[in-house]
Amino acid sequence: MKRQPIKTLITASAISALIATSALASGFVNEKRAWLSLRPEVRVGYVQGLNDSLNYVFVDDTLINALAKRGRTKCLIAQKTTAAILADRITTAYNEDRYAPLAPSAIYIIRMGEVCRSYINEARLEYGLGPL
Image 1 (cartoon, helix red, strand yellow):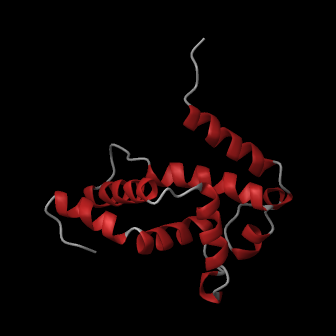
Image 2 (tube, one colour):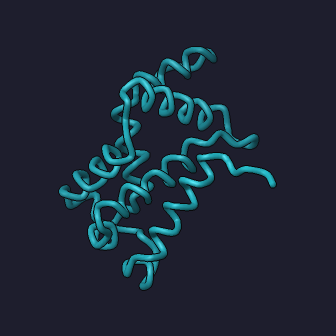
């Protein structure tokens, strides 16, 4: 029997936690109201899966997208960022009305672009691209 990688198990756990919530019963988590209806521990599981999926470099990614993912990953490691911290960043962003209609994934990309800009630019410079 082949053992599953821990990342797969964590993502599966996050998905299971989401399915168990009443927020998912009515639809996807696509805006502020749905996000805030999730229990804090479910937000952490959700954002762990979100983080894993948004930073996985696919073979068909553009160089720009792959380098952004590489920069975000280096940033997360260097800053010892946890899923709880990421969930809190999304929750905090929803305090601003302009983010209310956005999905948590969009807020993740926006906030991590701000927090990790220097790491993303470093990855870009390694390939001869200018900073963002």
